[in-house]
Length: 268
Image (cartoon, rainbow, N blue to C red; front, side):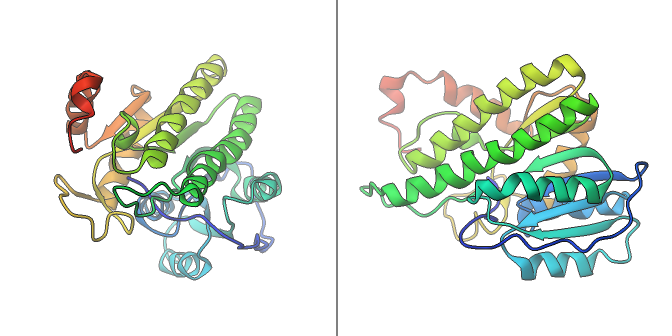
């Protein structure tokens, strides 16, 4: 499951102008203030990347930038609400120019509000569609256009194993993650023609703010371990869809194979 960097009423903060070079390795991570997104930023900056770190919570971005100030790379923070899709074009252009040669784009933002067993809440559903799907499409479209033009790059979308089936717990969350996986597959099929790789990541339980306080968790891994696996998988370019950790692939295979008439009786 991924990270809650997303919504409401946060204006785009201008990035301070700094010199750029075409040789600098660049990355952009959306949903960068905590969890898997922040862990990816840390790993990339330690490798020398200039990383555009996008999130709603500016104080956490500032803390991340301060934490990384002595590393080989650097953090370029940008405060942005992913629900404001009209801001995405200018925000992406600003970061793409600032980070240099863009090699990695990661969409890690997401929300999963608590939903009661008999709750049917359109407002919560709309929020999840806005952040988990529409925000992803708006940002990934920008990355796809740039990668297509430069005929290189890796686009990573952080989905969830929760998108493999329509579980009872949170219908909208499962639907948005399923939709994201299909959207990323379509991008993969388009961009493969020009040498661009698109990786769909389906984490199991990761120790992030989103999973804090949830009952019944098992096989929980750290956000840093998830980030390590994601980057290694992206670089290998063998995977189109990567369950993290890999043992969740077996779980997903079993879950997808359960007939619907049995699945609806199960409390999963």
